[in-house]
Image (cartoon, rainbow over all chains, first blue to last red; front, side):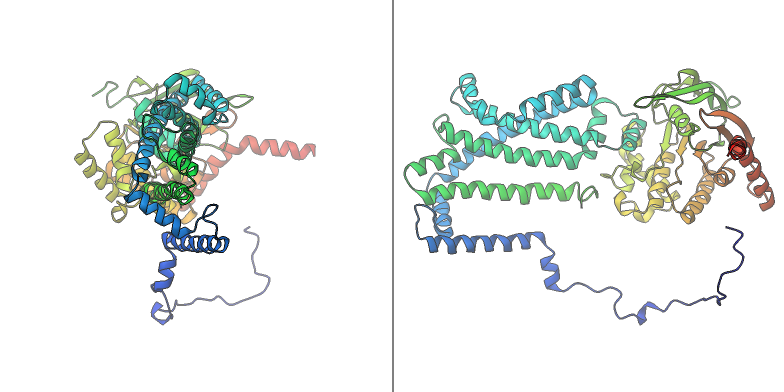
Length: 292
Length: 266
């Protein structure tokens, strides 16, 4: 390094004064209104929704067979009629209630299982074994058994929802815990944290992106299981849910109502995904820079 | 508060042998290492990679147990990690990403139950000011540069006012210019509070600049090669380079011999 005494080509040294920034055309300028609007994800998604609705409407009109494929406008009409005049709202509420019970219970079970798994090696083995055994098992396959164990009430639906939520959430949470960097773990222990405070104050926030993914997957699984269970065994304790609403209307050939029932599931899904989970994301993982 | 008085060493490491297991080997990281750290020392563990200096620091931090010998802090044996020995790591991800700079500095104060919220906040702001990060107190770590993150980590360690601050190559991942600045800042902070620090590095100039006392370790497994007093801060450039040369020859004497032998054989 020190042996290079002269450059191969002799050149003069160059020293320059930077130009004052006022001489530049643009240093910083606000984006145009159009650019700012198209930067909002919600706006872009709404535009896509409108396009999909228009395609649906055009295709259904072209087909002209309301028994097979009602138009978008007929579906929306049936949806609002069901919501304000019919029993769609109460059915949706019944479904939601069962769903939330199952979802919450599933998350609680997953929490217990993952905490056991993270604190001991045998717990890890247990979680891995149980997950590989039960995760591939469709919740619906357990429904006949659940009916025998818990009867025709909401209990058996809650049971199958727990089954569908538990493994997805536990698997994601556990892999999130395992992915927490060793430095952060050492920092937590350096503070003297151990046991549950360590899990709650270090592991859970650090693994939050994976936990959130697990919660989203669990939510979707819960819906699928709920609707399928209601379709299969219909009324629970007198008042059916959305699945039953769909089934009943199919039998009466009220196809726009069937579509309205499906539409309700879609709308609730859209709201939960794009409002509830989005707000949680914005306040947590995005704010912390764990996710862009 | 505790025994061992002002004249005894703050940290006593006696005949410490450390081993760890990799997937298929049992590795001896250090072999019968002895040293004493006194109050207000800037004690450097210096050695090439593989001399077990980071492992030694982890053992002082309480993350691993020596298989032989003992580590005593103020006379009490070190058994597990604790906030009386705050660590500053090399990695930039040592700050909790879900907390702002201020909350990161406050967190250990509260989590260890040392101070209530308000007092912790005051203390945190005081130390954030010491590392010149007051304008960034409410920023989240991901918005800071590497050097700023390390300054937060140092502030967090110092705010706890631990018996000893353990620094594991805290500036190694920084660019050269920032590293020099951080070294100067660390010395300025030390002038202010005279904290005790145990500092791991593999850079000889950094050891001379930061340290008041330097422990040289030989590689594979780490053994004490020498414990030297560093130069005063106003030492001349010639003195510094002579000292650097001396440390270099002590650390790499074997390596040079090996290289010579290899050359002869080749």
